[in-house]
Image (tube, rainbow, N blue to C red; front, side, top):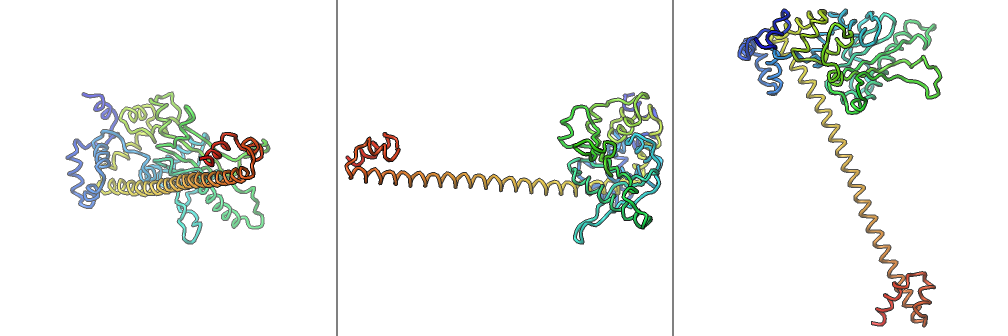
Length: 374
């Protein structure tokens, strides 16, 4: 028996149990709408889905619909609390689940849509965002999300406290951004996969007051390149980040053996494959989000490319114009010098006298005078 097969059977229902690709396709054909959706998927996504269903690898938790299903704040409150506790480094209890849809910034604008937003027992807020590609979540977007949550908190608290309201009543907002593929800037720092950002004064005053929001960027790709194996000596944080980043059988099996609490989650994920409608809805939604994000990224890249080309064209045009102007000025100067040399020559002055009076190189004066002689 191969190593992969023995690992898959070492724990019950850890991976889907379809015996072959054909068996998966037969199950999908029994639900025509799901089969139709399957045929519309790109070939690479079809293969990923089929490989998951036969237990060749795990399902990517970084797909937005998968992430929100696994960490649904109402259905899986304790699971989300355990994740947040490991990420924030303290015991977390969820007090309230808030709507994902935030403020509409302008009448013609779009709403701020968050993955998971909860209020914690200490009054603080936690926004958890899963991003397959970190470029989609720049620092400015984190600021907008935090601002939206702070304003929601402000309006709610002010309405509740009324005259007794004080800005001191506002609590911290945590924006936690998990990235499957982190931007190049994060790779420039060696062996660091968690980056925290908060506000502070350059003079050092209020050293223990970091403002109302803190951003935590977590690079799953960098983590996975550093931490390869999970054991019982691993930390809960390392375990959760492995769960979020690993899809290979060896890593998943090692994780569940060291931290059995993940077994029910993988069993739940394996059950996705048994329901063609739910599985295809999840993959179709994930693909729709990916296509939307890719479209936005392509538009942004095209915009930057056009701006770069326009800037280069302006620079080239300016260079050509400057060269042309300089050439005209130089030609005019030569004509002026030539006319002055002729005038002074007609007045009977020698080449040396002309050179001294016009402050020109003697060779230039002699060359022009030679044309007169000719």
